[in-house]
Image (cartoon, rainbow, N blue to C red):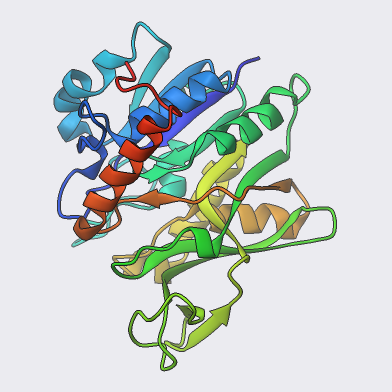
Length: 313
């Protein structure tokens, strides 16, 4: 069974300052997700599903979906604040979405096969799609509880223009994920750890207490490139109810149901394993508006080198 590519495209792009999922960066106005979908098709994926906000469905269908419908099967699903289990309601004053794993949950009615979850605004490179596509396509029919994550090296995933959010990972001797912790401020720092510094300075992240912690360049991180089977939706539905039942999550109007939160629970309980698939690929993307030109230049370089055609679709 061919795996499905599931793209998380419901974000507002707050740090970038607009709907960066729809920003044309390639030589013919291609978006980053165009390159991801092109690479996924080359890697043998059979369907593409997007989770988006309902309020830009029309623009999305016109500008994005129309390009792919004769190339690969396409589906849309929608993330909204009020997409909650029975018995729960949106807390007064909450405007922030419920997070990445809530977005994944929105695909439960349209995804019935092994699937790969990615961000729309990250350029992952083709090898990453080949690696995870191979893992998913080789799973036995009806497989459960055998997941994967493409583990990028943190030094290959940073922005020169500010902090980034990554899931810092650890794995065992069998390359199985043991922990993943979402760190929302990671940067190459000066010795004080307060400002971006020279490339030879340590990589650091800010912990829960506001302290800067150094990590090695080759530390594996999650770029939200996960491989799951449909049973993941069942676990997520149940755990989301626990998340919402926790008073501190409902009182914190910015609390989010992250993918790493769900994955850690399944690993710690022994319910599932997550294979960490190594890649030396260098990430790039547009976390900040200042990242845009360098991303345009790097895509053009890949086109000039013949990695991609001048016009994708």
